[in-house]
Length: 447
Image (cartoon, rainbow, N blue to C red):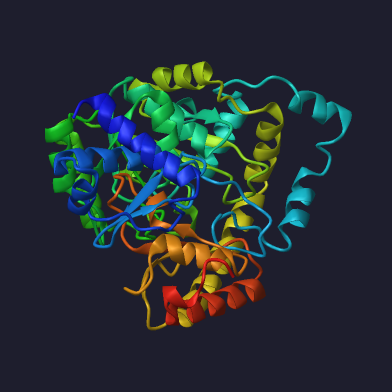
């Protein structure tokens, strides 16, 4: 079958989805059965299924098969935005009840004409000497103290990831990433023309041998990892694994893009403390402060700083002057440090509640973090469970959102614990437990 013919068959399936013949959650037959029904070769059926996965029309769950995606009508695997739902366990931005008053106290006076005039001026990717010094002191952790001359700024963490990727991975190049990882990097890489190569993980994080294998097979330009409070699995990489990973990266001359956005919830120093010449450190204020008032930080090795600056400028990712002014105040007067302290306590309390409520089910998490990974019982599928929860006004994220390889998502969901009140979180967890004890067939999709 020619390329155009297998694409036409994929288009036919897309039309069946669009007209309602196939509905979100429907299971496609095994590829051999599909090939027999359509009178095509099994290899062709495999190409059709791969095309459906690529378009976001279908999702694969390991050991369970291929299903029509819940986002099939859109025809793209785009991430949603926060929506009006009663209990949000999908988006992970911790907002404490009293944090607005704490922030307002720090920013008092910023609205006055003299201060505001400075704050509203155009900013640059390197800020000012004062902002670099304040940020360097704020980011310092244990034995790691970045120099002010290293600092580069962006509007937020996602922009920092994009700038770092663009600086070290050429268009058409490849970057190694954890097999389950921060979902937005998929869209960022696609827009930059970068291919993501999944690297196998275990309970300690990405495996050094998988880095070697990925580089041997795909010739990587860099790797992107989250050593502290990994999203979505929650693990923090232990010291022995860090040393082994850095040894492999050094031997292969691979830059490491280190995403530390959840690092404030743990005490482990960044990888950059051990290998400052190999790591591009990334952080932001979105989790520590609020998504509406953030600033992104990049601490690259000196040899890569100019490339990173060029990426920020060419990408249009420079932060606003107001973000600089607000961040400078909150970093220098201890406001962000206090918010981080309070959120560490809050995360532990929410995690304890979730672990207690989900006792008896298979979960992977870290007692310090704001999310957990729930492996579903065999009688539930990830997409169907998310849909059933949504009908009860609870938003979850299916495993397919985090999987780099289409069709290789485990049967699991991520629960983000940060957004609801404690009472809402308790109520939502109790509802999910009731769903878990039921069966998929017990919950009709039309109810």
